[in-house]
Length: 322
Image (cartoon, rainbow, N blue to C red; front, side):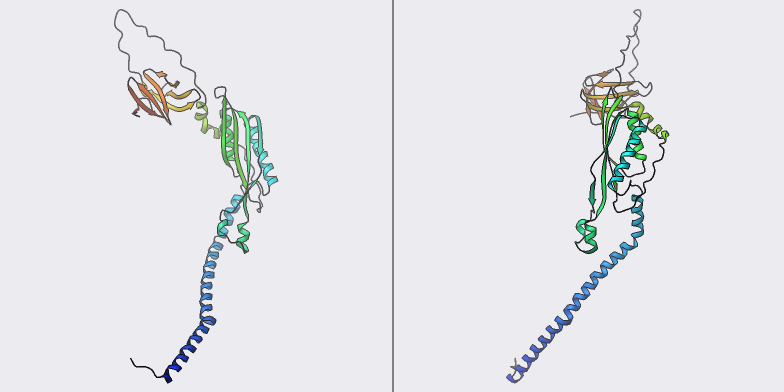
């Protein structure tokens, strides 16, 4: 490899140093800032596209918001609390509950669920700390019949304001004829929106026809024990013909539950309408009720054990093995 003379080596070093200085200066003054500006422009273009898409959906979002606002009881705690109490008291009075009372709890403000996605500055900072809506809970306490409780729930359901029922507690008395009832629900309002509450329409009593079967059966009522069957008269002169097989297919399991007396099963004869309630160890003809398994009743016949689900007749049996 030829060696450059010293007279050429020094100019080449000078040219390299000058070139490096020029490139560093150009990169610092022009190329690096240009790349940063291009990257920033791309980021801003993406955000503008997101904002434009959000702006295009704004009318639809506003319509959905206005629909929600139209189902609220106002836009401040005092008016919503007053209207919630008034409407619940009116419903309780129309249903006819005894010892009725309505209470409301302290309001609870709910912030945006997207709080973690917003920054702390500018418009996003305002949205980050903004209250989306406020919840107010209402509690109803009273005494009424099973039919009145069903009507109470249906009346609340038909009310035009937003609500969500949290719990309904029933304490039956007098063999399910009356109930001490506690119902808790919650409604909401948007504090920064003008709301005109929709008026309540008169309740249509014909709606209760849908619940006639449920009200008539009242699953909380314990049916009376059946009267003992009379002994058949058998002539002494000639042998009695064999009895026909017991019509187990006519008896349907309508309910299985655990009560303070132990497991119970409810039966109904779909031909005659007769009902029976069996506790553990009690029998319908040759079938003995032994246990309850969720929505299935366990019976024993001699050494055989089997399950019958709710809604099936006693001939629709599934062998049971532990």
